[in-house]
Image 1 (cartoon, helix red, strand yellow):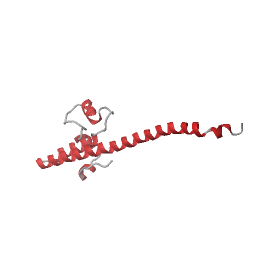
Image 2 (cartoon, helix red, strand yellow):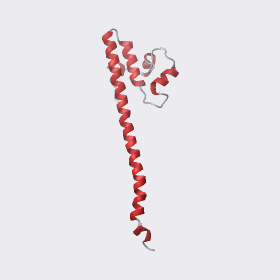
Image 3 (cartoon, one colour):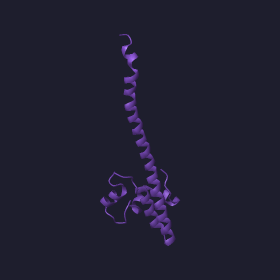
Image 4 (cartoon, helix red, strand yellow):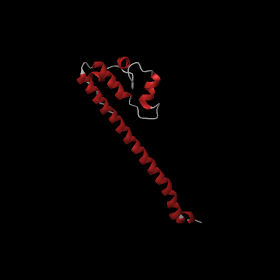
Length: 122
């Protein structure tokens, strides 16, 4: 999934990201809380990637314009994550509905039209 970030953020190695970024929550937030905020302990979409970009932007920013840009980028990235996961969920639900339809249609088809095959060679 593509998220909006600065070129400088894209060039960071993982150790550098780990020093600057802590996921969802203010600096110093305990890991148990950031894990909850990141994805509701696995029950929601993970916003950690957007939060990490936001942490980096805050670390790099120097004035109010940088703060507003970081906050706007965070909003855009959170919406990208939400919409990406919404589309995946809709596709999953449609797949379930299609398979439910097949589970009902196939037996109904053989019940209605399987007489000839059943009695063939008897």
